[in-house]
Amino acid sequence: MRTLPPPSNIPPEIQEAWDRAGARLGLFARGLRCFSTVSSTNDLAMRFADLGADEGTVVLADAQTAGRGRRGREWFSPIGSGIYVSVVLRPSGESKQFPHWIASRLTVAAGVALAEGVRASTGLPVELKWPNDLVVGRRKLGGILTELSTTGADRPAVVVGIGVNSGLTVYTSTLVPVATSLEAELGRPIDRAPVLVETLAALAVRYEELRSTRFDAILTAWRAFAPSLRGAAIEWESPEGVVRGHAIDLDTDGALLAQAGDVVTRLVAGEVRWR
Image (cartoon, rainbow, N blue to C red):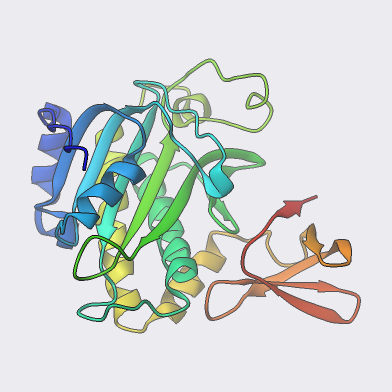
């Protein structure tokens, strides 16, 4: 097995914000590990998890060389331009099996926490787009990647990755029309430390709600961050081909309910295009 890379020193601004937050960080308070450049914070957090890392372990990097989003898409992650962080969670407790809904509900909970963290630290009126995007208008500001691990440790783990475009950067031609950043939206330099800390503090609260079977509170918060969801025109793939319809709501597992004609379809994975 490859050895884990040694962590770098925690940047002073991160340490200061971390210390100020204190107990608000909940299970994440003692688990921070910082790195300069990694292939992917999710991959590294998964390696920590497989070696038995405690729940609440946090992997933060300045840059990713192989960052990825949902469905294996590349996540543009140059140094100094984003917040790239992944956390290790063990929501099954001592059980060796996850509930069937764990990935979808955790993605919803993490999305709410990210939106809350960004709003609290910057005041930016961000919104959520199912299943995992943080947006400003029609431009993507950040995203969530939830992955499961059932190997390498006595208890299975979930790794939740969070990426936020924070600094101004030169995007690739394919990203220019669809991506934005905190600095681009606010017109001023951004300190990533408050964004990171407020997001993780919010995630600690939302994760506890999830474990306490209070997903209804998380759903209510998610809907408030997604005011344009209901009635939005979408299309999705089915065995019969592309279907066009509109979004209705999320169900109690975090899946998207969509309607085409008189038929309501529950969408869990796959590609949904917002028109």
